[in-house]
Image (tube, rainbow, N blue to C red; front, side, top):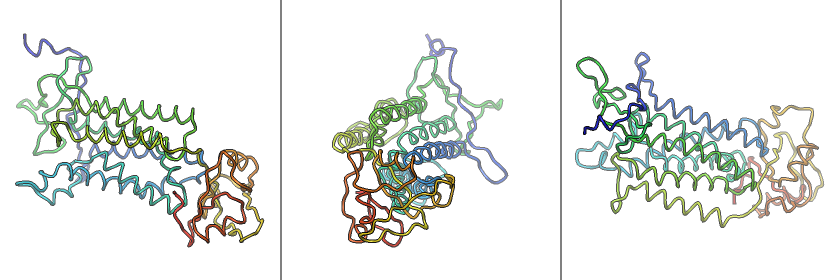
Amino acid sequence: MTLASLTPQAALPSPSTAVWQLGPVPIRAYALCIVAGIVVACLVTEYRLRRRGVAPGAVLDIAVWAVPAGIIGARIYHVITSPDKYFGTGGNPVAALYIWEGGLGIWGAVAGGAVGAWLAARQLGIPFAVVADALAPGLPLAQAVGRLGNWFNNELYGGRTTLPWGLEIHRMDPDNPGQALRDEAGQPIVEPGLYHPTFAYEALWNIGVALLVLAVDRRFRLGRGRAFAVYVMGYTAGRFWIELMRTDEATEILGVRLNVWTSALVFLGALVYFLRVRGPREYVVPIPADAPVPATGGGNVSQRDLSRTETSPDLAAPRGYRVVGEEQFRAYRETGTMPDGPVGEDGPALESDGPEADAARDGVGSSRDVDTGPRSTDRDG
């Protein structure tokens, strides 16, 4: 009995080309998939941010910070967890900067992207938890799209299988990245047997995680970053068992792949956060750029001009945001009047942000003003 007799006729093919030349410029399939994933995440996040009261286009300002920081974080994680290639015997430290040669770690991408998003949220005056919860279903969808890049690269597959969805793998040319080796007849060389498409398993799992986040968030109206915690738990649970199926080289601790340990630890951290953190969902009301700052002890209540469209300047570039509860947000949407009076049970607990911020709040009750002007303070607490 030969391996060929055990191999089913049905199989998933793999591309033999992952890089195309447009003149002197290489067009990489993996990069296109990453860009497409970023677009998907931005579209979903933009929609969810607008439903929380954030002005149109804010997601682009966030992406300008989060995407580069995510790429840097992903590369740093890869270099730290695979140091021999760069700092070991015969390694090339300068190659750590060659990001186009591959090597990005999702854990570093999420951590770096979170730092970038936090910085952007501070600049825009949006509570970071609002941004994180809005991103929660879009991020796994982006990861699912990005995993298609591994299919083009003929990488990140598992062990041998005889299942009908077994994957054909090409033997790639180390001297011509992105191209399969070819035989004398010019045909791409295929590795013997079929393999588990673990990248496809992860892509499908991530789509399921996105649907889970949407369902749980809709049912329980999560806030304070808890929707993002659901994403983290869902993703790491899948990454744990999928990582065990992979056969590519990886750093190991006690005979177990490093990413398996990371998945378990991150899952536990997200679970603890989800169970310990409580609080209602936060909404924000944009403060128009031309709105006067409420005077101490005054009773002025700013109002939105309902005759303006959603893309009017006061929403496109607000001076800051006021954090309100769900009922207050609904009332604002219906009447256009800035919420006044104390935040009810549906609103967030209030904390002092300093004398200047307290003075700004005196004129508008107990709702929080988040201003991006010279009086900028940290209101993410």
